[in-house]
Length: 167
Image 1 (spheres, helix red, strand yellow):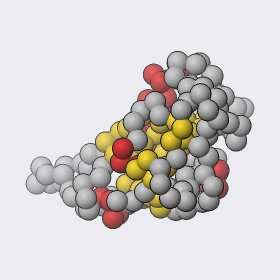
Image 2: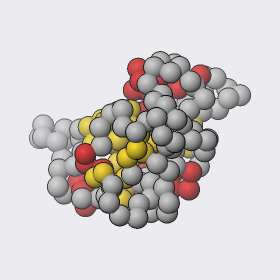
Image 3: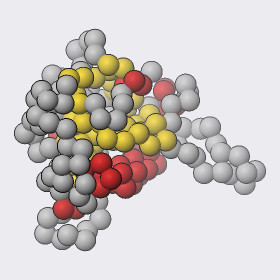
Image 4: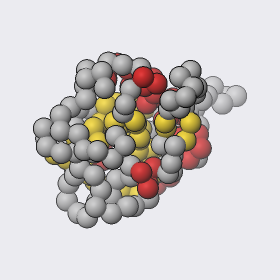
C-alpha cells in the first residue's frame, strides 16, 4: 500500500491574481514526504493532522511522521478527495488505473477547491501552498482512490494549525 508522490505542486502567480494554478516545482524536491521508518500510515492520515518535513526524498511512501500541530511541522492534512473514474459507454466506471496525469489534474482541482473552506482565504490570496499524495498504480489495485491534500509553506515551519487562519 504505497502512494505515489506526484511530481507536481500547485502554486499561484502573485503577478496575475486571476491566473490558474500552475506547476511551481517538483513536489518531491519542494514538498515531498520521505520517511525512515515507523510513523503513521498514509492510509490513516486524517484531516487536521500535522506532519514533519521529510528526512529523505522518496517517490513512493507508505507512512509519514505525525506531530502535534503545536510543534514545528511542514505539512497539514486539510482534505481527502476520492477520485471517481468517469463512466464508459456501458455506463460503468473503469477500474483501470487512470494514470498519473489524470490523478494530478484531479488532485490539483480537488485540493484547490477545498483550500478556502479550510484556511479561510482564497488560495490565490494566501501565503500558503498545497501539495498532495495520490494513489499509485499498486495501491489502486487495492481500491485506493483517495487523494490527500496538504497545506505547506515556502519552507518555513508552521507551529500551529492553519485551519481558519486566513494566512
